[in-house]
Amino acid sequence: MDFQIPEKAEALRKDIREFVKAELPEDWVAGILEEESRDEDWAFAMSISKKLAQKGWLTMAWPKEYGGGSASHWEQFVYREEAGYWSIPGTGMGIGAIDWVGPCLMLFGKDEQRKKYIPLIASGEPDGVWCTGYSEPNAGSDFANIQTSVVKEGNSYLVNGQKLWTSCAHRARWCWLAVRTDPNAKKKQHGISLLIVDMKSPGITIRPLYNHAGFHSFNEVFFDDVRIPAENLVGDENRGWYYLMQALSFERHTAFPQYLGTCRRVFDELASYVRGTIEDGKPLSQDPIVRRRFAEIAVELEVMKMLSYEITWKADQGIIPIYESSRNKAFLDRLLERFSIFGMQIIGAYSQVELDSKWTKLQGRMQRLYLTFPGLACAGGTSEVQKNIIGQFKLGLPRSY
Ligand SMILES: Cc1cc2nc3c(=O)[nH]c(=O)nc-3n(C[C@H](O)[C@H](O)[C@H](O)COP(=O)(O)OP(=O)(O)OC[C@H]3O[C@@H](n4cnc5c(N)ncnc54)[C@H](O)[C@@H]3O)c2cc1C
Image (cartoon, rainbow, N blue to C red; front, side, top):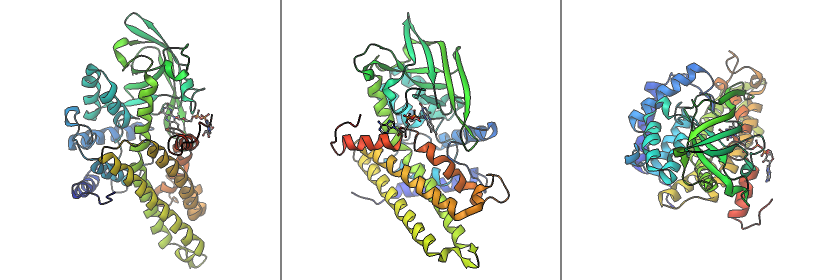
């Protein structure tokens, strides 16, 4: 395995840093899943999406024929890591557009769908923003249990049901929607299909859900007799489960370098806080417990980087990562938990102030990470679900349920 990041990818890092200097305010700070909350933040994120598209970075890893730059996996890695480090907004086009909707349409979509939707995503324009409708009140980890029903009527599907935790639905133009097309299928997985839904369709109601950091990131979405043209079916009817497993693998794998970048930035800021802080007359950096725990987090961050390199190297060799995506996500979930709890203990009472308070430390970065980690550990499938996948697909253990 070659861990040396190619020169071309390192050169890209420099370009991205110049872009950050030119386009983002000097004191720019933004947490994960924050940009879709406030109108002004969303408008700024979309203006950056457009610029990233013009630079050829937004969908850099996509083939040229689909508006991408055919960049290597290493270049993509560096771009995402820098995007996380500098909190570059507008890199996602909502939830899933770049990481799984586009790639799945390339694999399973119809020609007309590829021609219509993929360039829209690559353009960085608001009409290329997507949300992902998988979870329901009775279907999260047990994803195969989805109940949102679909009846075929002539040349269209009539959709009824409810989705839950739909991130970015209030900003999205399209929804990547998992529905039940065959309620009588012997195996629940065999009665699921995937539809492309125009979020402007009559019959869709979006209700906001605020996360515990106070941001409007996800929603409940209700479908009441929503009519979807039959041409919006992705692939074949009742083969949705197969497409969804691929989409989930993309989801767990592609976001990893960005989170690595975010963690590295918070770590660097926390380290500089520790270096410059005197507590009870003594430098915080000389506290043996602080030093030991800091070193532990540093080691874990390095492990996270290596896991990420390994998956990138494999992808570069044409090897499709299967259990590795789950391994990385399960590792990240635990690291985020340990790191953010440690960081909150380090800043002590300052961890209790509002994000925009004059007393806040690290521009609220530590609280942001702390308030986000439980959600991230659920999004894209919980840590327990990832461990079940590792047990089954890597260790050859029997199914756990
Ligand atoms: C920030 C955030 C963003 C999200 N965005 C979206 C989105 O855009 N679109 C979307 O469709 N969904 C989204 N979700 C929903 C997410 O996919 C679900 O929360 C997740 O799949 C878990 O489902 P659940 O919440 O129903 O929990 P449950 O499935 O009810 O799980 C509850 C607990 O039981 C455990 N558990 C369940 N089954 C097992 C098992 N077999 N073995 C061991 N433990 C188990 C889980 O690990 C968890 O701890 C988002 C969630 C969050 C937090």
